[in-house]
Structure formats: C-alpha cells, structure tokens
Length: 293
Image (cartoon, rainbow, N blue to C red; front, top):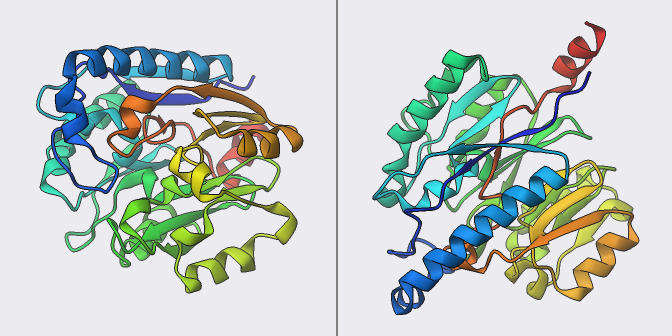
C-alpha cells in the first residue's frame, strides 16, 4: 500500500515582512496594513494546505514561533531523502534564527520515526535546504542551486551525504535567489524553468540533461507570479495564481492545476514550494527496496 506524500508546513501566525534580504521583500507594504495582511496570510496558508490535500498529500503543521517570521518557508530548512535530513545553514542572520528551531523539529520527527537521521553540514558550507536542492524523481538525481545563498562547495556536501548524483546550477541574479524560484521538475520528465535566472554554464547543464521537448520555459510574467515555485504530486500541480499563458501550457500537457492566492507570501519572496517541505522523498534504490518488501 502506497502512503500519501507527507509535507511540512508552518502555522503563519507570526509571519510578516519585517526586513529585506531579497528583492521581492516589501516591508513597507506589510507595515501599511499588518492586520489585514496577517488575516490574508492565514487564509492563504489554509488554502494551500487544502490544495495539497486535494492533490493527494498530507500536511504536518508546525506551531508558530514568535520572532522567526520566515519559519513559514520550511523548504529552506533541510534537504530530505530516504529519511536522511541534511540541515540547512543560512547566509543571512535573519534566517539563521530558524536553524535551532528546525533542528528541534527534525529531532522530534526522528524520535517519532518520521525521519531516520539528522545530519549537519561541514562548517565551511552554506546550503539553504530543498529551496536550493531539488530531487528529480524521474531522472534520479539532485539539481542544486548555488551562487546566491548556497555556496558551490555545498554540491559535494550533498553528494557525500546522500550518495546521489548532484547537478549544480549557478544562479545569475538575486531576484531568483533560490533554485525553487525558477526551476521545477514535473512528473513525466518535464521541467518548468525560467532561463534568465541561470548563468550560461547552468543553462548548458540544463540543456545537456533535459531534452528540448521536456523543457517548459516560463516567461518573466510567469516567473514573477511565483508560479514556477510549485508543488508537484503526480499529474497534480499546486501553485500560486498562474498567468493564463502558463495555465494553457500546463493544462495542454495534461497536468491538473490547484491555484492558490499566495500574494501575502510573495511579498516576502516565497510561493507554494517555499511554504512546504516534503519529508518522504525516496531515491530509486530505496523505492525499489520498498516495492520488493
């Protein structure tokens, strides 16, 4: 019997945009109507959770922690595969506050048997979790972003921990500061991505590993809507409200869309993928072993 995909989300009660560490963040907009935006963010988070459940997932909700507003983006907390949890190390001091919180969360999940092992990065490595390290289930390897938040040496650290191939993609601009803002593997070998977010060398890697027919290019408008920052469960895609152009592309390829108004979180530079962390991803070897049991 196949269990449902398990995602981590965070209660957004203490979410807000209080500082600027990426070009999307608008603390002035938040300050203009904090009560209204707090209500809207609670509604948006509930709608995202419902959309994930409608797409076939299960959500574990973390309690809020005051003074750690970006805790609502657990994709950056860790890389998780086969029950191994590689804890993130953040570049910015504002997000470093999350590290002890998530360490406690994963230790509690380990005690429950939800994950097996919690691992620290080497001391000289910055790596911001699944936001910069995305498992491609169809190809059986990690895509790893570096150059903005995560350091190049994170590629070797990830490969060492998980013993899986890692394809590094250097990010070209602070606007697309994590890989998940501009790159999304989809079931059926497709990949949705925004080419201007990558250096020429990174684009060459994408072209080497992904056939032209499997590349779905997102326009500037589609990327700015945070529609690339999506959660994929089989043929279901959960994403922020998509421009009609992207909706047509994806529906035409046979995907089913669950669109959510995530405007309060886009004010901080995050979308559906940022707001979740999948805990049950399996490598090909692990999936085969489980299937044989």
